[in-house]
Structures are given as structure tokens and as C-alpha cells.
Length: 259
View 1 (cartoon, rainbow, N blue to C red):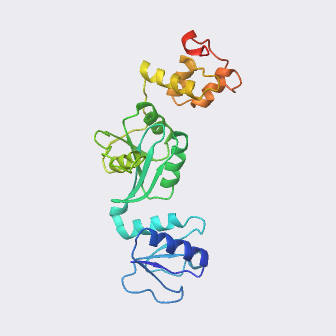
View 2 (view 1 turned 60 degrees about the vertical axis):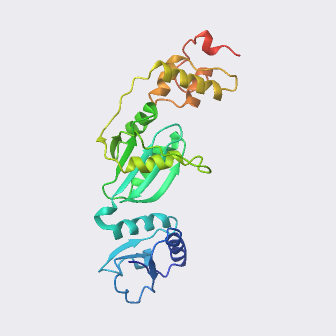
């Protein structure tokens, strides 16, 4: 059982609300009271960090109550509460954080923000693993190559995207990430991908869509985007000649002429 025991009102209020939102069974006591029978985890504030010695103690940060609740739930589940982060790669990856079989957090963020989110969620977890789907080859390679501080597994994501009924638009990537998290993959340190002509063309088309002048970047810049060296916006800046990188390469007329 989880027990909340703190004199810090902010910690008490935010942790209790977070536990209620999760539908978690818990109880509360004053910090100087005896813990109830069955107590296995205590969530408290920094002022009582050393008060409870016979149970697992989680010291909550008043600015991040969710983290304390995640840790408490993982502790209650014991060895089955390992943190696994599933990622369905793409331009806007779905990210699911599991403690054992329970989904404790989910995100749907732009690719440029995904590494920060994953590293933050893995930061305080014991032996976390990140499982990334092998689809969306360029995006998955970028994530694998940038996540160098955590164990990464590449997962065959075949069949992980569920059927979505009416009213579930936008949930597919996150639900796929949950399924990916539950599949064991191959541990990888890096993923080298040679982009196909079709993938290069997709990047060019995407740059044209984002360009104020309806102009696409050239193939050299598109390959740097594919390799994760530049974002599309950074490549467009170099293409205009106002970026911090090297001078713009000559463009093919069919990709650079204004329409």
C-alpha cells in the first residue's frame, strides 16, 4: 500500500491529486503517526526524508509530483515495475512509458523534442530500456543515434499499430508505442541508414511545403536532413544562404525554381 505522509501542503495536495487521477489505492497519515499495516511505500516531503526507515521512502519534489507517483507505483510492483519506454517513430513520435505492464505516461511530440522527453523519463528509473520501432527508418535512426545514455532496443513494429475506431484520431502513434514497449528487440548502439531516392524526395517536398518562397532544398542538404545533421528548417536557412553552415550547393532547376 502507498502512504502519503508529509506536512508540506503543496506536496500533499499535488501527490494526492496525482494518485487519485491514476485511480490508485492509497492512504494518508500525519508524519508523526504510525504507519498502517500493509504500508510498503511512503511518499513524503524533503522535511521527513529520514523519518521512515522500515519501508521504501519516496521524497517528492513539489514541482514534479508525477515523478514521485511513478516511483511509488514502480516500487509497489517490485521487480515487475521496470521502466520501459516505447517509441513509435515518425515526424511526431508516439512515446509510452510503462512501469511493468502499466502505462504511467504518454506523449505525442515533434521529432525534435522526442530525445529530451525520453531522456527525462528515463533519468531516475533503475535500468530503464527504450524500445524503438524499426519503421520510419530515417526518424528511428535519428532517435537511436542520439540516445547514447540509455539502453536502446530496435523492435520489429509489424502489427503494432491498432485499428482506430470513431473518435480516436491521433491516438494511433501512442497506442503503437505501448505495443512496441511490450516487445523485446535487438540492443543497438547506432543505426546507419542510406536514404532511398524516395525518402530524399519526401524531404525535398517537405522543405517546399515549409518554404516561404515555395522552394525545395537541394539533394545535398536533403541528405544531411536524412542523416539527422540538420532539421528541415535549418536546411532551408542554409539553402537561403543565411544559415550558420556551409555555402549553399547548386540546386536542380526542377527543385529550386519558384512555382
